[in-house]
Length: 375
Image 1 (cartoon, rainbow, N blue to C red):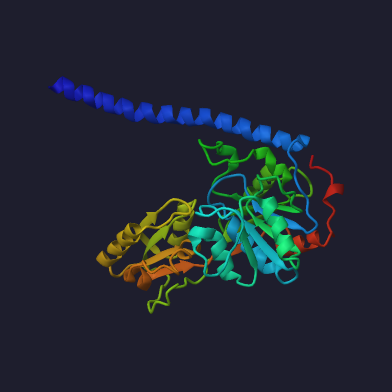
Image 2: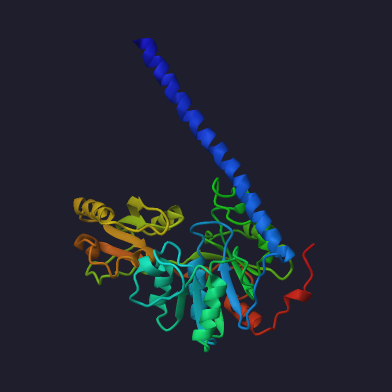
């Protein structure tokens, strides 16, 4: 009997060690095929077999080379807010996770299930801006220009790896907490595009930086990102903004309060770590990126809050978009829910003013083609 127990224990240990290693090797093997596929695709664009289309109006593409949680949407929102003062702006997004397909213009009262959570968030923030979702970017841009001839600037949220659209400006967002050099290609890691694609970027924004980021760290990031003299690198962090109640709760959230965190984003660790700088996080409910909350999900969170009546709930701006128009949100969550509006702030040591430089670029005051490559 004892021998059987010992044998079973040994087999369990071997499985715990062997199976994860086999899975890692399998994912690495699959990632090689993924790398080959995207390499061939880039080669076809470079050779002209696949075509990139230029348009008569300027297009700013905000993208990245990894999946999940780098902070593209706050950058896109910053550009929408700034450029709307001088241009008639349209924002174009794929509308990731939506249950619909094709070209749709987002309304402030649209369902996030139809248009995606991030496009709806942007529309509710900027109701006067045209927000469009479409998985075929070229088709979408042609429809925008035909249906809305007043539009003279398009900001494309995501699509750096797409390449069917030849954007006037490529803004590439990079997560400082996940360096691409130590990452792997999908599905073994989070890289969805070749690292060499960074050569096509014009501006890099390194997000989620520590406020006290050293000059040495900034120089190292510049060394890894800048391949040409014209490329500029900015360093940013998420600014702490006073939390807001989406349901006009009578409760007040104060610095140092005990809270529960709830999020369905690509990098929940960065969100929770940011909260810990201002609040006492006693519990964290982490769901997958673009998560569609079920009634069971909300009831689970509500029951935890009911058991701990002194706690308050903090979620992300992207998640709260899904709750505002829902009748299924339990009353406990309505009373205790807060979110922190996302706002980027640039660190000292970044290149000169980002928005000013983008404006000069759009006005044709910067000629990138004449600048030499870095040695």
